[in-house]
Image 1 (cartoon, rainbow, N blue to C red):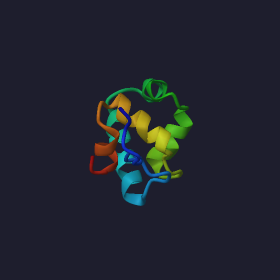
Image 2: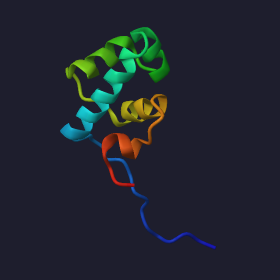
Image 3: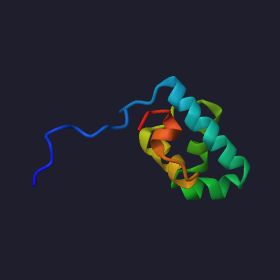
Image 4: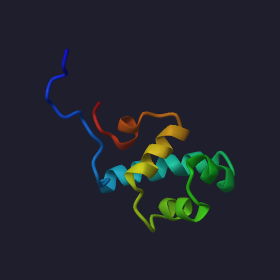
Length: 84
């Protein structure tokens, strides 16, 4: 039995401003509930990168958004506001 020849829904290559803001807000709430060091370690990113995302100095990557979704136990689609 073969699967239909359709592309599965995917995460956008670049997050929109709204999606980036959603990731930042979720990350900020998560970081407030723990130490910056522990939050960065859980995400697998440096503290500096995490703090730069929170401060809005850099845009979160899709991989970073997926890590935020994982550690905060929310579906990536729900985090970035993408209908599943």
